[in-house]
Image (spheres, rainbow, N blue to C red):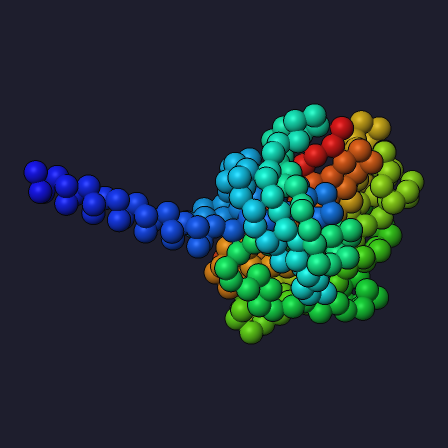
Length: 271
């Protein structure tokens, strides 16, 4: 009888250690000010909004709030639940208190045991000719012959910590309005990544929409970089891109893999 009892206690001890480790490594991230659960990370895996929200349903935790400029305070989150009326796959976490005005502005809340912002980005001039021409060439390749180039973000940051900066650029041109209901010919909103691989500079179209022709059936999105944060504790910064259109919006998370950004999480909510 002693051996089965010993096995039981060994199993119980191992289970407690696994659960304790999981609590330490579990991270969750929310979009502010609406408190949508973007997703989470645990034991080497990315978790969807739903999978993360279920872990938060009876948990009170503190989120550190980040903008591109840096840390902006904290918010306290209580229970989470799906947004059943509009977006059943997207969970929302109720907020009980905050120590920052950032909760009223666009920001990212991160609950994690590591430093989510080990390196900050630096904003650069939007009129630098080399980046204007690079964007023009990219839009040419996407079918716009004579694009009107309007850079809206130009951020330098060492994403992977190798000592070399990457450059993230966003550009948006919607002739009708800031968030139009219908795109016209030549409209676009894109996010690009410029990296140095060996001695060669390469440009990746990370995310976006390009309209060489008008499209009466499209509901175009505006794209912008919302955060540059280490969401899984590996020391490499993930890129968070916010999207918005006239009836809603969303958020995508992109992870650097072999010099290329790959989407690992996505939420969208709207009519």
